[in-house]
Amino acid sequence: MSTVTSMKCACDTCLCIVTLEDAIEKNNKYYCCEACANGHINAQGCGHKGCTCN
Ligand SMILES: [Zn+2]
Ligand SMILES: [Zn+2]
Image 1: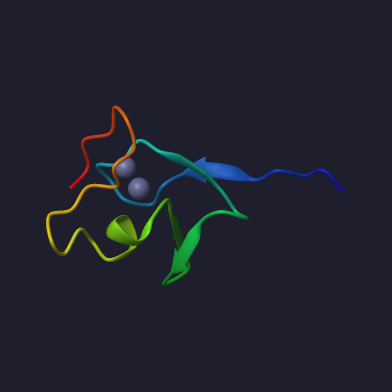
Image 2: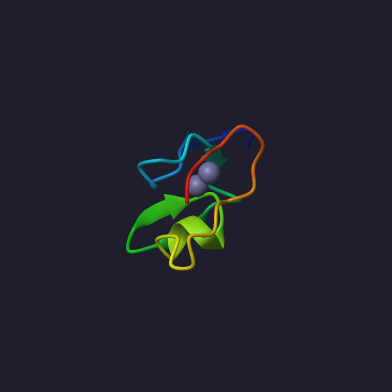
């Protein structure tokens, strides 16, 4: 079993690619990190280089 399922973070402004294994699931969507999953509630970015989501 070496199936890797990757997708873009469900956050619109986020460019990060996440794998099913690493993603944070919320409401059946997959996010790269807590900040995205929480809708950037504190205007906090995901902190990934080159990504300006917040
Ligand atoms: Zn991001
Ligand atoms: Zn994200």
